[in-house]
Image (tube, rainbow, N blue to C red; front, side, top):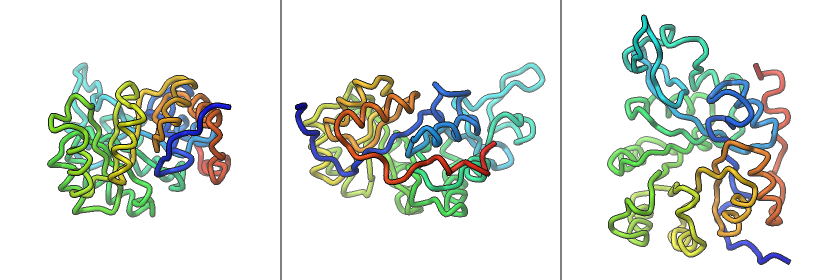
Length: 253
């Protein structure tokens, strides 16, 4: 029998479909988000930029071709960015709100509208806002009941992981998000000692998902929903508390 997984704060861990589960469709597309949930993902991940007229746009790079020139979303109105780029509102209208949503806040100016949009959808408690700037994260902590995530790397923790975990607890930063290769069971146990969630990204293979789950991680990000679920299942975790098959039924695009 394989050894039992180390304790975690969340069982089973959240399976975040990276960019909506880009192995199953186009990045950050409504149909890809819907497919990920239908496959059983319990969370979605996306990147958010603010258009010049205040819409939270879901796209990795945040640039669009306009009159032969690549321009930042912040300089373009929504209709100039293009119908193929959804907004956060579009996502909630298509897929409902019964899933965890991890937002990589690429444009800090989008923070307030992201929070307001999630709140209006009744999904603020399922929102995880990720960024690497500590000042921004602590400021956000005072403005929302959403989860705040320190998205970083171990080498950036100049003060060391233990002091970082203690500071997170003091400031109300809920989770730390590290690349999969940075995690060890001991590191996860350290952050769990301070009651902080542990997330790992770039989890692209079943064996890696199983290994990270065995370390006690609380959330995994990957392009392949099926591989995430298979890796978690191999460690003996129960299935998600409900099926996502109906989440995007009549609402899906």
